Image 1 (cartoon, one colour):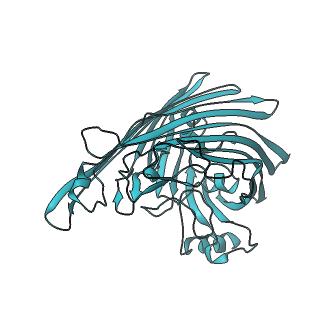
Image 2 (tube, one colour):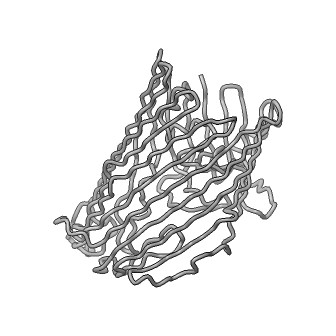
Image 3 (cartoon, one colour):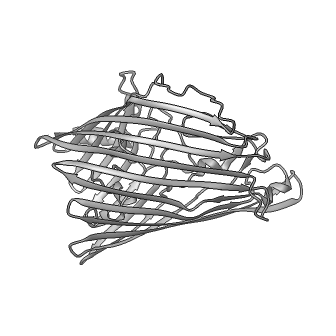
Length: 407
């Protein structure tokens, strides 16, 4: 009877969002999964994990066309996106198809101002294939294409805007070692979708070759990991290729994580991660006359700057707990903080500082809680909530909800 009541409350929740609830509930990255905590979401970080997590179907419940950012008390991870997929093992191989996963290409950079926004990644599809012959390997191909025709100047001027993205990923798992790479081969948008003038039809956003390299090693029960990532874009005022705006971002991550089995039905999860994020932008001709970008430290890259550089260094500490409350209910929660190291800086071409070189005043502590309802092979994951007001919101018992079935 209790299970019936709980599932009924879940289904009638007025704001059911799709998300990677378990990862977020444990303070991990909800997009690509954890660096050290194995989970089906890990296939987007290292496709080799399809050899470990397979024979299931998953649907993430969400709303389409959601912008980034937190709302409804469920944190600052990207808003939920309707998505889902299917993975199946066939002899020594595994294959899978996943629909709707928004990759980490930088769609937020395509909104250059209040009235000029390029088409972003829409309706992507990921195809996975891998095998296990002692060495687990996996690959991923990601593709998205969209087009929009509309009138400019509010009259008969008609033009087309379009977007295409293409990416590949590879991963290996061998005993205590795992390695992976993710490459964005193409991320291009032509024509400003929300343009107010016909001239916007010739504007081009072209992403640089995006590269992510990472590795992890299990040593004495502790997972050591590191990752290097670089990406960026060029914005051309027309299709001739003159590049008036350039942007580049680099991210280095190193850390360690451990899963403590404190009981047969309870696990404590801890990790410490150092992130060094830096970026540089140039808009010497002020092509974005009314626009700006938000850089890694939260300040804006203003138009017209010949060169702006920012850098942010943080040490993130996370403590999480996951326990089986009953045979049909698993609860989890976490607390996360950018502690001890939380430094920001921003300089322009002349070397002038815009912000304090060291800033530890930001409030970085966040908490999350979630649950999984188990019906044998059928499971429902959800996030109970985030924040710090100490209130359990029973109007939305579970948000960022996912339904998965294992066979």
